[in-house]
Amino acid sequence: MMKSWILAGAIGLASAMVAANPYTEGVDSARVDDEALQQARKQLDHPPAEPRKAPLFVPPFHQRSAEIEAPAVLCLQCHDRAPHRRNPRKRAFLNMHGRWIACETCHWQPEGMSLDYGRVRVPGVPVAEGLIAPLVDGKPVVTLAEEPWVRRLARDWEQADKAARVNIKARLHQPLEEKGPDCIACHDGKDSLLDWKALGYERGRVKELRDNPIARFLQRTEPESPDDPVVRIQLRDLLE
Ligand code: HEC
Ligand code: HEC
Ligand code: HEC
Image 1 (cartoon, helix red, strand yellow):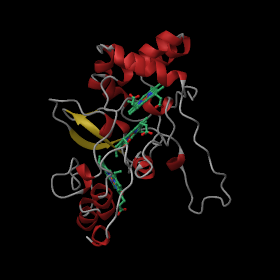
Image 2 (tube, rainbow, N blue to C red):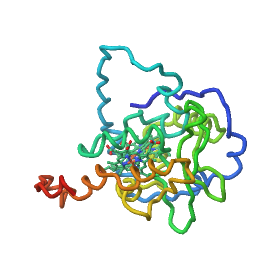
Image 3 (cartoon, helix red, strand yellow):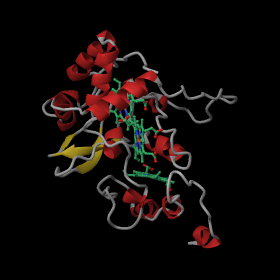
Image 4 (cartoon, protein in one colour):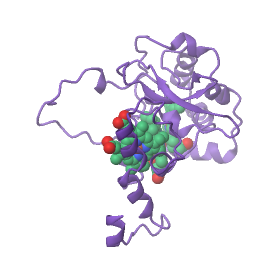
C-alpha cells in the first residue's frame, strides 16, 4: 500500500516551518514499547486492502484544479486520501474532512501543549482555502513532503528491511492518536476545538457548523460497544 514518495514542488511555508516542529521532534525522540512494535509488525504483515476506486462515468461537472490533487504532506506519502475505512458510520465524513483539515488537527493532540488552529498554505491546496492545522506558538504543525526531514525518512524507509520498517512505523505514530476527536468536539455547542470565526467563517455558516445535526445525530446514536454495533434509533433521535 505504500505509495511512491512524491516530492512535489515547494511553495509557501516550507522554510518558516522547518525551524521547530514538535511532531517531528516527538518522532525523533520517541521510545516505542513492545506493544507498538507488535502492532506495527502485524499491520505491515497484513496491510489494509487498497480502496476500490469507482470509475467515473461522467467527467467532473465543475472545473477542478488543484482541488483534486493530494496535498503534498507527510501523511499522504503512505496513506491514501481516503484513509478511514474502519468505522462505517463515520468514514465518509472523516475522509471528506481530510480535504480541508490537516491530519494532524485530529490525530496530533499532545497533552500539556496549548494549541490553536489556523489555516495553513500547503502545496496542492488552493491558497485561499488553506488546510486547517494545529499551531504551536503561531507555527503550523504540518509536515510537508518536501522537508529535508521527510526526504531523510523516505530514504530510510526505502532502504529499510522489514524490522526497520516496523520500527519506523511505530516511531512515526507514537506521538499520534489512534482515533481523532468525536464529531461533537467541533460541531456541538460553544466549546468547539475550532474558533470558527477566526478561521474565516461567516456568522450564518458558524451556526450551521457549530450546531451540526449530522454530527449530533451520529453522537446520539453511537453504538454502546463495538461488539454490539446495532443501534436502535428512535423517532425522537431523528427529530431533535
Ligand atoms: C512511512 C509510512 C507512513 C507515514 C509517513 C504515516 N503513516 Fe500512518 N500508518 C502507516 C502504516 C503502515 C499503518 C498501519 C496500516 C494502516 O492502517 O494503514 C498506519 C496507521 C495509521 C493509523 C492507525 C493507528 C496506528 O497507529 O496504527 C493512524 C491514525 C495513522 N496511521 C495516521 C497517520 C498520520 C496522521 C500521519 C502523518 C502525521 C501518518 N499516519 C504517516 C504508515 C505511515
Ligand atoms: C475530523 C477529524 C479527522 C481528520 C481530519 C483525520 N482523521 Fe483519521 N481518524 C479520525 C477518527 C475519529 C478516527 C477513528 C475512527 C473510528 O474507528 O471510529 C480516525 C482513524 C484513522 C485511521 C485508522 C484506520 C481507519 O480505518 O479508521 C487512520 C489510518 C487515519 N485516521 C488516518 C488519517 C489521515 C492520514 C488523515 C489525513 C489525511 C486523517 N486521518 C485525518 C479523525 C480524523
Ligand atoms: C476538528 C474539527 C472537526 C471534527 C472533529 C469534525 N468536523 Fe465536521 N467540519 C469541520 C469543519 C472545519 C467543517 C467546514 C468545512 C468548510 O465548509 O470549510 C466541517 C463540516 C462538516 C459538515 C458539512 C456541514 C455543512 O453545512 O456543509 C458536516 C455534515 C460535518 N462536518 C460532519 C461531521 C461529522 C459527522 C464528524 C465526525 C465523524 C465531524 N464533522 C467531525 C470540522 C470538524
